Image (tube, rainbow, N blue to C red):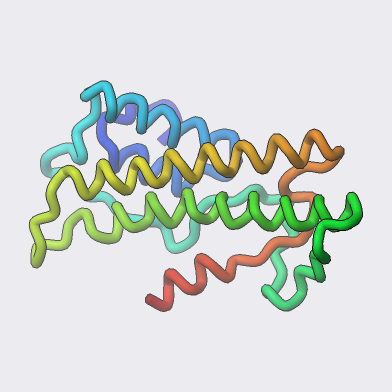
Length: 164
């Protein structure tokens, strides 16, 4: 959606789900929530169709492995163990952002239920909160001399969502 005006919550949902950088994903989420709170976003544009991608955008350099191959994190007693734990927390929050956007897209055109705008506003607030959490964990990783994406990650949360 780069270059196109994002006029609705669901426009932001598609853009955030397709965004491959975490900074971009967080920025889109924070901006959408701010505009929503200011009353400057509708849920959807009339007559427009919105679809979630099969997989959310992720940084290309990530080493995605099966959940059992991410390695042991320990209990946080050493610097490397703390980094591994915090990396894991950041990873969970990163997928929580996508899962929040995904639920809005999955249910946006469900004609069997007329969901109120507050449903989307509530999930947007969840995405905003998860973006804040991710940002705090990612910042802490930098303070410890690392960064999100330096360790292997898995897509178990996303796979679970697909199976539901």
